[in-house]
Image (cartoon, rainbow, N blue to C red):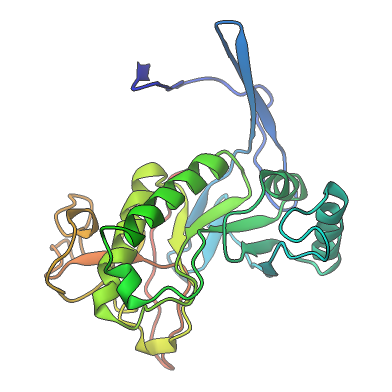
Length: 283
């Protein structure tokens, strides 16, 4: 089907289909030709989810232990434009350290890097540019949030077909301890979920258990871990989640307050039991 300049192909069989995983990073290619032009994309077949009993991340139905580091493209001389040889050297270091996870800190990364992660079977946390985000930034819907949502959408455009990407992130160590910032986190989550419901959404939080976004209310299919925040007055419609038909509490009732975000990384108070989550759909 075709709509708005986008062609959607469904029900296309994948010859010799094999799942992608860190242990066996099988990749497939798809070539689309039209009007004498063609585009070839690589992709992997895998499914992310959460184990109901332990709340741990799963890959292809199996609990996965993730080990890795942040990755900055800050090389001497080449700076943020590394050579292929420098990228290969970084992959070799990650493999030597036994890593199966890399966080793109703190900006979208080069497609050449994502290609290498796909081939190496190393999961990637893809994150928008966002150090030093302030409460004022998150409340600036006329400028800052316009460009934040735009760069998030462009990041997804750039990376959505890479098998290694398991999470979309934003606002590195941002103002998650301020309720006023909650609508901005929620708007990013809503945008990412609308574009891609098969991956996690997340952010790095350095406020431990004091964060305003760390009050879990519910877990629902296709949406990951939902975060409940109190009403903060003016709030864009895109961050209001309570009206969603698939957003219900485990008891089947509607949440009494707005749900404005998701998180796949949390720090838990001692003795507090983690809630179980529901697996997301495959991609």
